[in-house]
Amino acid sequence: MARYTGAVCRLCRREGTKLFLKGERCETEKCALSKRAFSPGQHGKMRVKQSDYAVQLREKQKVRRIYGISEHQFRLYFKKADRSEGVTGTILLQLLERRLDSVIFNLGFATSRPQARQIVRHRFVLVNSRPVNIPSYQVKTNDVITIKTDEKKSKFIREMAKLTKDKTIPEWVSVDREKLQGKISRLPERDDIQFPVREQLIVELYSK
Image (cartoon, rainbow, N blue to C red; front, side):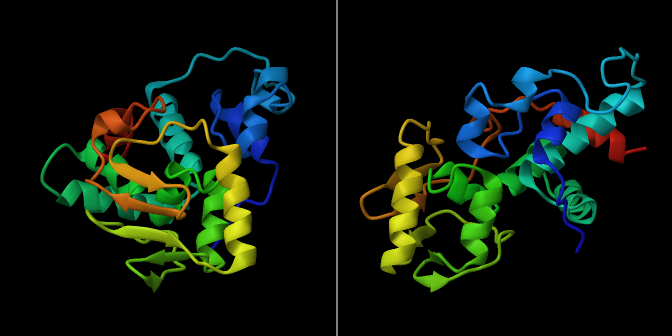
């Protein structure tokens, strides 16, 4: 599967908003968007009026890049949301938030979603006492997420937890930092997703 290997700060500049792909660096003056708040490239500073399609596309790209998934994966999530009962855009965001790598990030065991993805892939994580190394794994209500007790792994996660000690934990999960354990109290609702996204634009884009 194709994976973006370029400078991730360019993605934030392209979308015109912080995607928090580099963890704590995004909160400092070193953030590329803070230094150069315009799109990368020769014509980045030019102001171009965007068409409705361009606005919709940028919103889709922003969400896809936040969660670090491919276009194919994103389209599958949308199809699943479209087939489900309820508001398609809200269900789409719920499916993305329920990814195991996103849960690890929300619990404060990683400083960014890319780092959380690596933690899952490197077999740091147990779900209901069973090892899971699939970042796209969909958590369910009452699932218990635990970091393996391997000394080297748990030490690394504790260091990450210290860096994120002031992070606001979403209400749909609970966390015990001492035990390096979290629990899914309920499924996420639209109000639990704090970053700015207009999901209706994505629905309009795929409905054409």
